[in-house]
Image (cartoon, rainbow, N blue to C red; front, side):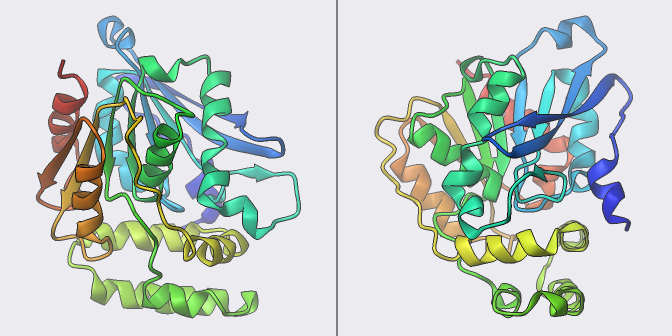
Length: 284
């Protein structure tokens, strides 16, 4: 897979038009945003979905759900600053990739897109889910409703990340190949294996390393008492890369929160997940 293709392709799906634009978050960070508008006039006027994918996640892994969702309502897909698509006009430093720093881009990007977060739905996965939760907990953003997949209370580096973190950059290419080999044997879901392979091959090596270094120190503050956004948490027990207890603990800490069990992590990337996600988002 060509790295430039991963971050440069504009995914055009039947039933919707797509534009790829760069929007400045914090000063010096221009995030790529994919923005779909349905062709159907009724769908065009529905609430917008703001989608934040996971750590280094490439769009291809989300095509099955995106290709159908973008027909049903407007959708904005924001690629956060650790991804290879982000234009960073500064010297790379570790603190740029802390959860709070990555999160700080969201509000200015959403505002510059002309959107009012409180009138939108939000969907996030893994690191994207964690960033959205931090944003609503700190009252930086408030959404009409939000569904998240496999959020993290903390990031315990898996074996492959513990190998990557201390390694010199010149060894990363070889180590990434080892990690892909390891994940092929570690993960139960074939779709998840394919997504992680794409993610690792497309990752910006320097950003990947710095993000690993800072995320291992992260721990979420679970005081959500002031959170007003209704939140649904998707949990897949078959997912061997995420801690299932995090979703359960968070669902108990967050007011107006519902734990939603799904059959697999891959299911949340498929079009069949849309009715489940939207049934929570749109309920009164």
